[in-house]
Each structure stands twice: as C-alpha cells, then as structure tokens.
Length: 75
Image 1 (spheres, rainbow, N blue to C red):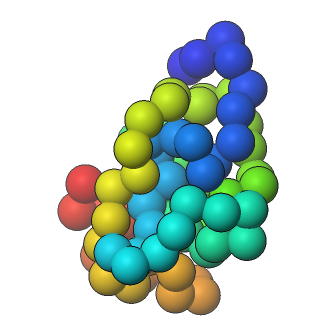
Image 2: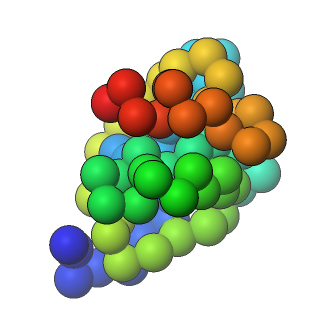
C-alpha cells in the first residue's frame, strides 16, 4: 500500500473504457488486487491511499453499472 493518497484518474488501478479520457467525471472500475472483489465503480476525482501512479488500463465494459465481475477479475 502506498503512503500517498491520490486520485483515481492518475492511478494504475483505475480501469476505464478504451476511448475514455482520464477526467474527474469519467467512470471506471478499481482493479487493485485487494479492492477489486468489491467491484468499486469510481470516477476520476475519487481517490484513496492504495494509489499507485501510472497509466490507466483500458477494457470494454469498465464503465458499466455495476461493473462486470468478469472484466475486473480477469486482471
């Protein structure tokens, strides 16, 4: 776990749709290996202390409500 708190839009655990932009209002799903079982659908301006800076992975269905468990657990 990171000692730093950070925004989802800047985190490598925030999976979004292939054509989506990394903005405050973009919806995606958290794929952190500890949190993914909860199927958190979060926007870019959400954040937490499991933050790891990096590019967002992209996968179709990441913005569905609720997120599809198959696209989250496949990581």
